[in-house]
Length: 327
Image 1: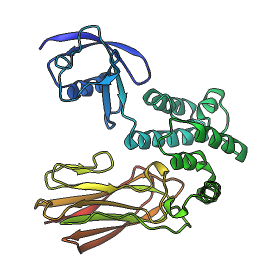
Image 2: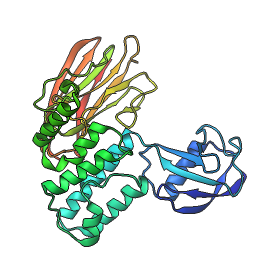
Image 3: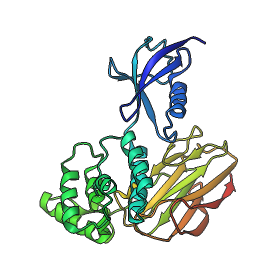
Image 4: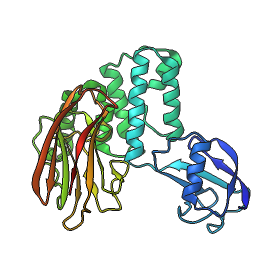
């Protein structure tokens, strides 16, 4: 296979000389680069030609895309909900490390965050606390200033998510108060916020041949994982399966857009679910100051309840195997 020498710029802006095959799909080249540059493979990336500032088509080769030797290629994660959720989780872990005075570990985690997204909002000023070895004593003045900074930033994904993120350390109760004040100031409909203690309609859930619905209470970010009959896993990192399944609701993602009655839902439409065995898991992705969380999984076939299974998740990164069923 012919190779060409190019310069690859990682998400943090560092340049690396690379020899790349020019006759294999770009999506495979991205996988190779992720391993070489030690980047998390669970995220979605694009390879951008610096000269044209356009992403290279993942199914094409470097040769077909017109990439020549000595070209500069920028590798960076796509700024989607998966990236935000991943970075928020690392940020929360760094906060815990600082509380435990594990400065070096926190420094490594913050370095990973800002390597992947240099514009990520450090709303608790963790970088400064790590560099100056300051205790994590967040007060109302600090939070008010960080809220102001986050709300003025143009790089935030969702305005409401930024508000909640900026005051996350103050607890859900104060988040609700702030949202009520914001809603009053801007004449917004409170039902659209769907926060604890505020009434509002829940999301419309897809249904059909097969429907698996996860419900829980509190602010925790639980994730529903369903493995279809062909072994493909549907979750927030893979919302659509080739068999026709879809994750259409993802609640409390990254501790943002908190729902009063959180729910996640995977379904196959009518006449769309293949026969075979389906497996279900529930993952405690992030506690969001919620602690142990009870959940309930409802399984429906042909829009009729097949089974209801309850359980409890106790801590972050814990996974419960709910069970399996056949169709």
